[in-house]
Length: 179
Image: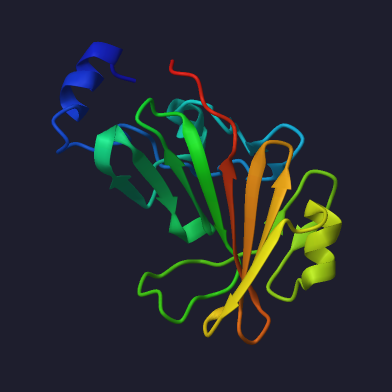
């Protein structure tokens, strides 16, 4: 591991990914969602990007405006996004393929602490059993979206027109403090 100042110098130019020195993870830990702790495996909402190091080098490091970034683990079916302070602010879990998506993403069922599993066949009753009653819903030509508020998290579940659960996204509704 590099000293923090040296790593800052190497990555602040915007040309070197923050995760360039992260190892490949031979046996990365499972990412099990714990809604009561607002955590996704080793990292909690508002946690540092460095907490994700145990997951290994991501398939892609994404740069956004204002110092925000993302870690895309497409081969494992999820991605995390971080605010300008490199604190986790958003997570996406890919459950079934999106035909309009041109990336190769390994879609997988999502596992929750307590044993619940949501896969492509999960219907509205399964979503309600995990997240409670939706606070909003919308439909369009591409599918349907249900929104839930769960303990300071905004959860969106998107289904295709044919009813397949495609994606679950989770964002914090709480203002994160600067580190």
